[in-house]
Image (cartoon, rainbow, N blue to C red; front, side):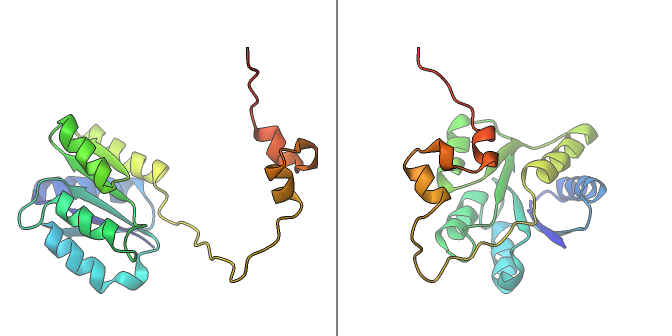
Length: 173
């Protein structure tokens, strides 16, 4: 099951966002909190099941705002891989830039109409798939052979068909 943590101090916004998400995205659980402090409490308590989680949070909240919460999440290796979407009523470029510097994965102006709430949910479903594969590192280094060797030597003839058919080459003029 997919989990979306929704942190927003406005109860009406949380309700509208949750309704849109549950209408658009299948097999999803939306967990709502009022501020960043409660979000961090929930996430640290549920740290074992965060592989299919996404955080959608407001920038301006009481107690612990979005940037403070984001700073904690992105500085902790346990939580740094969780996608975080920030939203706010502001379109102040300095605040948005600051949020990206803190590590958000996306920013959006808060929706105000039903169509915008639906678009928000569709965007989350399309651009942030919540079921991500888990990649494990090999315990010992491997010798580069075959595809890796060809890639590093720029030897296109030795590359598999699927690779060079998808690459677009541009000629220098």
